[in-house]
Image (tube, rainbow, N blue to C red; front, top):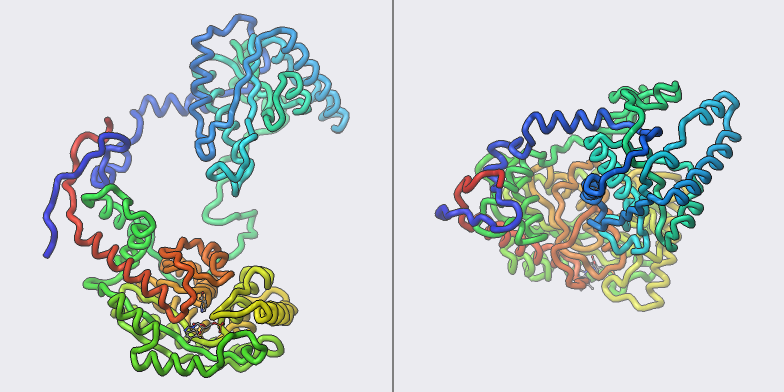
Length: 577
Ligand SMILES: Cc1cc2ncn([C@H]3O[C@H](COP(=O)(O)O)[C@@H](O)[C@H]3O)c2cc1C
Ligand SMILES: O=C(O)c1cccnc1
């Protein structure tokens, strides 16, 4: 039964346009042609001005120019810029002397001819221009406290540079000249104006009515440099240097593209709810829906849980709180539909499959876990399993069982992500501190052995320190994606398997959902590496796909919620308001 159509609730604040309006005319946000042309004219005619008339700049004009600067984009909307407007002739004179001193110093470092050309350059603007605007950046907020600066700590300075550009263009439109002088020892300039610690300057802007109207940059006219062709600075897809273009990462897998992703979002935006109101769940449902759009109609709607079992000779080093035989018990219970994984699948309305991947041949410390042919065969088996499950299911939740496999997963995570044993070894099914110490030692020795080979590929790493269920699971992730199904990851081992899969086929990343963040130590790092935020964070340590099943239940509920919620009507009101 399909739901009825309802009036679109138009928000009274913010963006009043609907997805349908935006899809109908994607360019409707543009300015009229004369305004666009004017913008390009101003950009092209902006010059660095060094000669000024002495006439004053009216306060209203100055305010307009400063307001444009203050409208610049800034990292995390932090507005870190400060503008010190200097009109005192004595201050300008002292600043000019500082710049002269630096000019002589720099000239002394240059070849004689370049030095003469530098000395010829007009730097009198600081004295002549009626105003100086010293742009400063208040850096006293710690970078980690500003959205976007923890990763790019200098983004606050770039924001100030954006403000300078805005000021410059607004000034040019008024007919004013701007010259940006950075020939200072920053500490001198900061001292001159009394900038406190933690506030740094980006230099001195001369501002006034220009006594030159240059059609081209002064440095270009002086033969100092020339504007490079735009084609020399634009690259397609990857960094390219002359003819040394490196090959792109191989991916034969088609990930949902822009068309599918936008279509899914348009569809979701037309629901009788505020767009994106299900938060992270909305994003995971988007993923499911985008992948489904690559399939022929009609496509399946439900999900399955696959639990893969493996056995590990590494247990002989005393790294698990349980005996090897537990793995066989769980496999038998799974067949009887009585393992925790089987029960979790039933609770979440998922089909259940278990698969026995067999036994590793090496203990990681002395020998590779798997030979190269065994590794390849296991990945191929997994790929087929994944494709097979994808035929009947929209999502494949994955889980594992294998006493000792948190040691294996930790070693593989460390090898693939270049982490230390301390960062990856966790409690597993219940280690005590002595066992943790042994696990760290085993992982350290396994890594030392594997790393003697130098840099190794994902499949080699899998063979060296992985295990049979991890290899099969890497294949499952690949096969499921090929079949258009999203894989819902469980704990550490399944997530490390997904890392292997993304190394083999970068395109699979778009088909992954992190079901949960488990208590196992390395899991958070591995999920971060995959760029995935977990749907659940319950400190699980169950293995067997229990967390993936719980999350898949929620995910399928989210999908049902989206498909069952009423749609709103198309356009209501103009796109421009
Ligand atoms: C009864 C039992 C059932 C399990 N089901 C999953 N695991 C979980 O614990 C094992 C990994 O932990 P470690 O590396 O410490 O051995 C895996 O089998 C994992 O799925 C279980 C563990 C036990 C004891
Ligand atoms: O986080 C996991 O994946 C995990 C933790 C403990 C035991 N088995 C699995």
